[in-house]
Amino acid sequence: MTPVSILDLLKVRIFRIGISAVPLFLIVACQLSAPVRAASVTPAASSTAAAPPVSPDYRIGPGDQLHIFVFENDQLSVTVPVRPDGKISTPLVEDMVAVGKTPSQLARDIETALSKYVRSPKVNVEVVSALSVYSQIKVIGQVKEPKAIPYHEGMTVLEALLDAKGLSEFAAGNRARIVRMVNGRQEDIRVRLDALVNNGDMSQNLPLQPGDVLVVPETRF
Image (cartoon, rainbow, N blue to C red; front, side, top):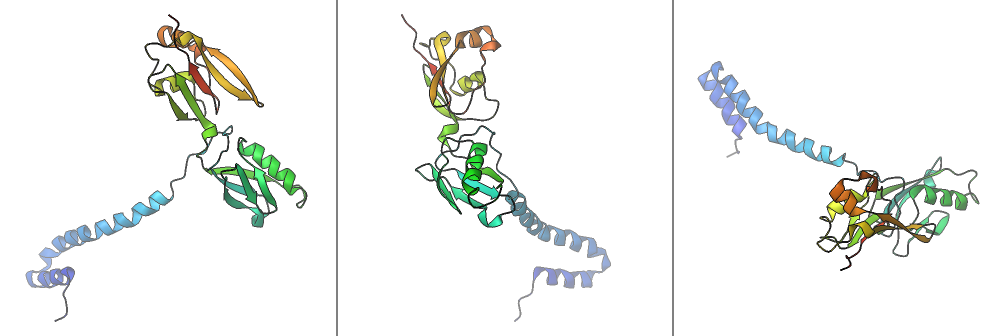
């Protein structure tokens, strides 16, 4: 015997009981088809979700995925990973150091290398997948939860301190400092965390940069 579908049985039933059953058939049919429509829409919506862009001062590091776009040269445009040695390889440019550079800095370096082969190359570098430890903020010393925090544009000392659950019992907050690398040299920026947290002195809520280390020393007895 040929299998009979649910819809076929409903149609036979409608024919027997008359036209008054048509609304019931329509309701059942809509309920049967609704899950199919919802399932077909959900994947499409999720596939269009884009990763949030990184800030312009993001520092590229090992593990990042980069899209190298060379204007009017599709054959030179590729998506490549940053290798553990901190370098990338693209068509015509091999073993280019990427680690520690911003996307725009890397783009300019690639333009310089390509200028030997391409007249006035225009390059754009996009970070497709951002995993670089060079764009973390580290909070160490006398805080309740020393940790590394992913950097985002506009990040401040107070935000990083709250993420680390605040000062510990033995913190010398007013002797804290931000350690920052500038052109390969270390700079120490003093920040009075006790004044910020306890007195609301917002002048101490300094902006942070990628790679900064917030150091909170122990109080002296």
